[in-house]
Length: 113
Length: 113
Image 1: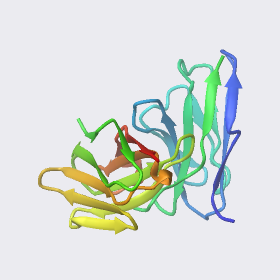
Image 2 (image 1 turned 90 degrees about the horizontal axis):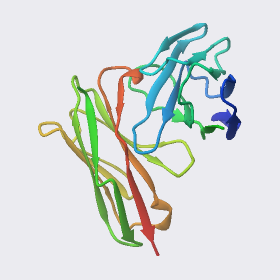
Image 3 (image 1 turned 30 degrees about the vertical axis):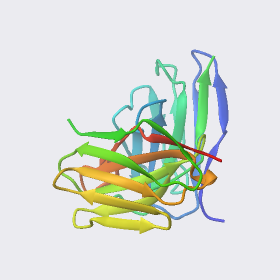
Image 4 (image 1 turned 90 degrees about the vertical axis):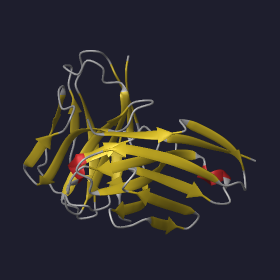
């Protein structure tokens, strides 16, 4: 059963804590992305990766970090430096960077208490 | 500044009726325009992708149109069903790569029985 999985579905964090959101895909896709979605706004790109061991900052990378040690996995860490981390986080992937349809995971809702 | 604006912000219609959602964009350069459907609390799912030369594209009861001269697109939903209740997001690619996507804020569609 191919697809993108994200875990956990809901995550609660105390201020000052780092948390890591998981994203795994078994679609053999090269490119992976992390987006943030806030109410009433379009998706905003946090980080993306074209190949293993390489990733690039998106439009709102401050306070976030990623790694791409395996093709299938692209975890996102929300650090304490992110001032307003409460949001819905979406992971996506596609075969290549160019034109290809993006496939999204089910999302993780992060709430800072 | 590259922008994608969608209207209306929200829409309520009765089951079985048709509706049309609008998307205006000021994105340059233009590569392609996409429509996504996003159920509440889930990741977006692609409905259509249109390039500059395509005026219309259908996916079942969904038909998207593109007027590249006026920089407008519409998504027409025919014979609406309760399962069509979702947010519909217009996305314009500002280049050849998926990290150059400009996301609209979406139209929230509610279908009432």
